[in-house]
Structures are given as C-alpha cells and as structure tokens.
Image (cartoon, rainbow, N blue to C red; front, side):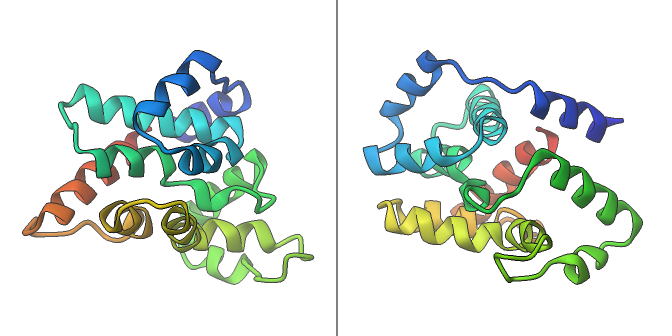
Amino acid sequence: MRRAIQFLRALVARVREEELQSLGEYLTPAQMELFRRMPYYDQRHSLNVFRALRARGYDDPDLLVAALLHDVGKAGGALQVWHRAIVALARAIEPRLLDRLAKGDPRSWRYPFFVHLRHPERGAELARAAGCSPTTVELIRRHHDPAANPRRTRLDELLAALQEVDGRS
C-alpha cells in the first residue's frame, strides 16, 4: 500500500518556485543546477527528505545537501515513474531480479534499471564535480548501503539519519 501511495504522489508531484529559491541557502549554483536536472517527483522527494531531517533537528550542512541531491544520479537516465513501479515489484518478488533486468547499454529498454541500480555512484560523482564536500559525496554514494552498525563515526550517524528518512519518504 505504501508503494502505491508513493507512486500516486510521484504522478502529481509539484515543486513551487519559492521552494527552489529557498535552497540557495544550502546549494551553490552548480549544485542547484544538479537539483533542477531531476524530474519533479525526485525534486519533491528530496525536498521531503530535507524537510524531515530539519524537522528532526538536523542542521548539518553536509547531510542537508546530501538530502537534496541523493537521487541526482537518476537524472537523465530515462528513469520514469513506471520504471520505479517495476523496480518495487522486482524487489518484492526477487531482490536479484533487478540485477538481471538491468543493462548498461543506453540504447536498451533495460537501461533505466541499470541507472536505478547505479544512481548512488553516479550521483556521488556528479556531486563531487559540482563542488560538494567529501562527506556529502560519501553520503550520496552510500545512501543505499546496508545501515552502518554500530554508528561509530559522524559519517555513520549522518548516513543512518539519511537512510531512515529516505526510506520513509
């Protein structure tokens, strides 16, 4: 049921210009350009993650920038809302099915699934090139990794917060 609601929210996702303007406090112009490359549903999701972290009292700039850019690696990869529905179904049926479905050839209909699987690495490299801090880059790269346990470092703590909120949004 949660996935169905997420799918419907993605179909009607909107981002107001005022919301984008307020991000100048957190994102450099190059980082803002990355954010704007994402489709509205990813922008909305990222804004929701950002707001949820702030509502929980997080104010770490590295974490907040990672929240805004954690899915930027999906941008430009032909990944549509319906692909995401297939991703959710594939994971529910057999987690390794997505690995078999993905193909790294940009001309293939299977390429969007490859992009989905590789978006953390791709997003981290885009963030690095846009001048994000090493911590932000690492948070983006690891946001789908298994949860860090025990939480020994600042990076582990920030990653756990990002993963928890991202998983609920």
